[in-house]
Length: 232
Image 1 (cartoon, helix red, strand yellow):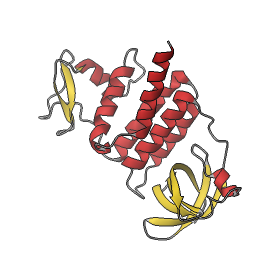
Image 2 (cartoon, rainbow, N blue to C red):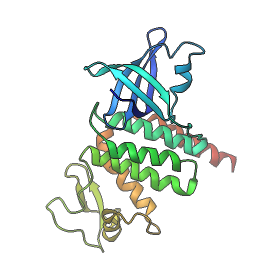
Image 3 (spheres, rainbow, N blue to C red):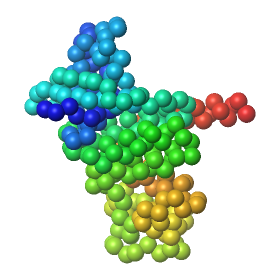
Image 4 (cartoon, rainbow, N blue to C red):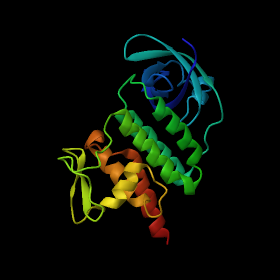
């Protein structure tokens, strides 16, 4: 096979000197493979196989668990710290949990690449993360229906909440205004004041797919916010 652009999503030790890795690839989506020898101290492959590092990879094997045959760098590692780093870890975690193995996801790869470029810039971070989350929902065919469960158009003056059982929206006094949801549906995500509602919709839509297990990256983010509050 030709070398495939890829990013590391998750890595864990395997046997004595190897690792099991989940990679996001351009044409094959998420693959799982054994990376032999990467746990050896001083191994060049160990230095290359890092989060947020652009890679070229090839692999062997027809089953779900592959064997990496080639791994080379194809650019600079995104240097992230603080909140930007935690957002990157969150993106890796949700992609690992949401993408079925070997399901093509070229749009997810494109938005992930754009996300890494934006994470170091606080002003661009939030919107890039929402676009990446949305690409995951699209890949899973799980974007919300911007209507009521029986197909009625949302009223701009009524508030709604997302209903996981129907994938649509139902009236709720504590929900989001219908006109705001229309902006989200139209992709007008840079409208002033839309960030909070957009985040709420994406998180509510992702929740049923992620299941009940806690996201480790989200817990780390909450801990960071708490420490900042204590310092004030």
